[in-house]
Length: 425
Image (cartoon, rainbow, N blue to C red; front, side, top):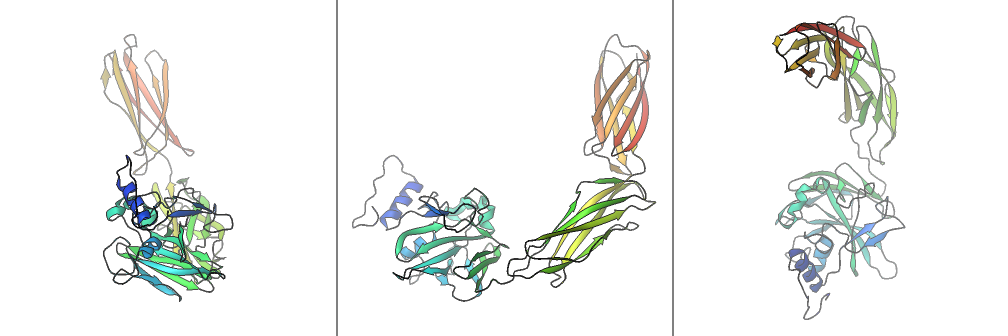
């Protein structure tokens, strides 16, 4: 029964927290906690209310805390000595205590969305900061909820109006409903923009702006392509494409990003064009060249590019790539034993380096010439340690005498060779 005097709940074969707590919620006068499914958007004209859809509420699909809309209806929030729910009716930054804690601070932020002309019923946004504490302990595994704020809708004169909102509608999951720090939600009909600015173990700060959207700058994203290690000979030049994405929110105007290159001593790197002027949410590209010096030690070198907002220099993005300076590969081949007596297992090893660094992914071909001039050939590749192994078996009828081994290593057009030998008795 929803409410009633007395209220009744009949439990048959399901004596579990999820069931008992849920049914007692009905006895106290609560309806189900829903989720608002609007497809690829958070709000829209074609939305469906999922009956048990709120995965953060025991009146939905979990065993977790009841939402702020439901607790306010019960008087567990915002009534007398109960912890407060703050109504945000002016632009500013608001603080929310962790929802599950026993502190006396504000447990929710309440923002007017709309008012029904006929009845005067007000629909509100409710914002909560949820953590993996107590009955909500399983939330400790939900990185989305822990790094943002959760939003519900609820209407004053409609007890059956609790709806969880999906702030990541680009995913199909309802286990990532929170508006994460750095992301913005705008309701143009209500004239409000929400922007979480920080979360920690004690709560969250949320920027609320009424009217036009406030500018919330962010670090740009910088990407270099190709991003994998490039092998370069003395004096040659590698050209990359650098792409900068402006991550400021829609309340910001276009920004200019100054590009700066960085390279080891003796190397040079430069951008074709700088600055790049980009509107929020857009990307721009230019070329990035990194010529190798005529003389340098073989090895791996890092070159990088930084994009800095020229008007707000604390906002910057960075990306780096690795260039392998190569004059020749160094290859060492060896036999596990100097002498073998068939039948026996034999092992050949090869170590490939560029300078002092291992040459991962090198192709190594072992060429074994027997005393009767017959040949065994096997190819393999080096691992991250630049090491390759060839295991084979010597047969009783294999010829005795000196077996010659040549190894050839190649990678990205570079090569190296090495020889060894072993005896077969």
